[in-house]
Image 1 (tube, rainbow, N blue to C red):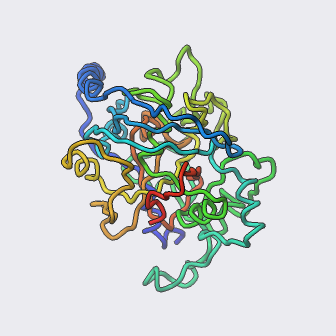
Image 2: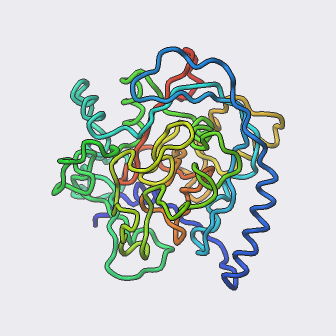
Length: 377
């Protein structure tokens, strides 16, 4: 019973339920109309014009901040599980963020290893689960481990994520897919199998913090407004792969048409307009905001421009109302137009804070001032 910790596994699911249109042509027509309306809702980004701070922290890019339209267009997808990935990223609303520094890449295995060596930190996936946290679970199932993508060998309906996720004993950041694997040759890969407190602990040690959702989206857009992707509206401009995503038939086999099956090393694709790599695909990234599907509506109802928003005060996911979830951003190597279109900029993911997976990492930011924007909540 590897799934005795099913509550943890369920927290990683990204499942979209909607009615499939009657034909591909109707889908295309609908998307054109929707995108035209959505584009009209996006106003130009107004970046701050303050001088860039003189000293640049190693490995970080300066993000000017400013005012922008936050939210998402409909993903360009034809499958019922991918089409409505923007439902909780509406309405589009205006937001202002102060300037900040952001890591150019996700935190890598070698960077995380330095943190662990310096502090002796033990990640959540390396700790034995406490019986009081999982009442009713057999003692033999309370073992240290984490959630791993485990593709089936045959086609399956896409309405049950347990068919491709497993809780694996011994899986952790040192062994992302399980105890048989290790990090040899993967020093430059994003660290994965990190829960929210793990990422937060690293950020504090590094003198940084995790980005707010608004900061993350401002940075991901790279100065562009109303675009589907961090680089523009074409998924493969001139046939060029721009992100590490899933090709083939999900979830059976990734054909690696983009050059990578599974996670790739950091910075294998072009940077966006702000010099940031992998802001779409490869691995999901933690943000500091609690997740609520109605938070954007709250901001829009308040009116005006939301200044440095740091998310709702409490989390709430109607599908799992008792789980404490933070917002994920960016999508991963498992995203495709068949199942998860969350590589579309502006779309949102979510995850229970103690849950780690082998497609989830993080990057850090540093405020230009001492202010912390309450992001450590």
